[in-house]
Amino acid sequence: MNTLEINENPTEVEVELQEEFHAYRSGEYVGLMVASRTQMEEMGLTPGEKPTTDHPAILAQARAAASLTRREFCIWLDEAAVLDGDDVLSAAKGEWPVAMDAFLESLSPEGARRVKLEWAAATDIHRNNDFIDLLIWWLDLDPVAVDTAFGIEAGDA
Image 1 (tube, rainbow, N blue to C red):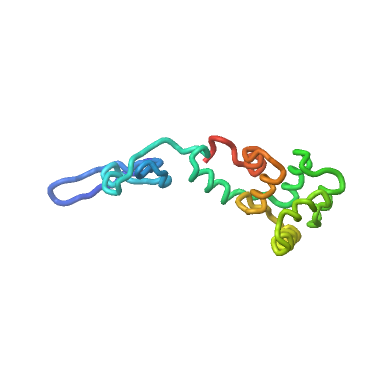
Image 2 (image 1 turned 90 degrees about the vertical axis):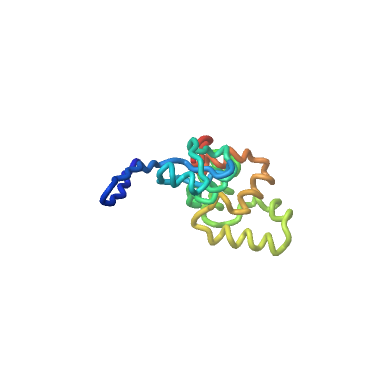
């Protein structure tokens, strides 16, 4: 997207094209911006390529925005063979799957109660929830596969 900025006075017309670009400051991604080259320099920004999820800040943003309904998450748990049979059906209903009881033993009593409460009340499962990271660790899941289940593909932003 390009826009045209025109500054007029009685003696001269100054035209500076504004551009849409991915902005970086000191090597850190700032975001998608619309500005002129002069404005970019004044702000200490440099243009760069669209970042991918390989960039840690972009991956964190993508994970923060990603969620699945409990239904979608349970379908993934079934398809990925994380849970099966009655356990996946229990999970879809908001009940705690028997196969996950051992997971609760790795938590404090308060933590276990909190995890079960959050699961029972959840309508959406958020990728950046600590529970998902604990499941990845406990079940030795591939974080990239979990990201993919949440719609985060390598190279996306």
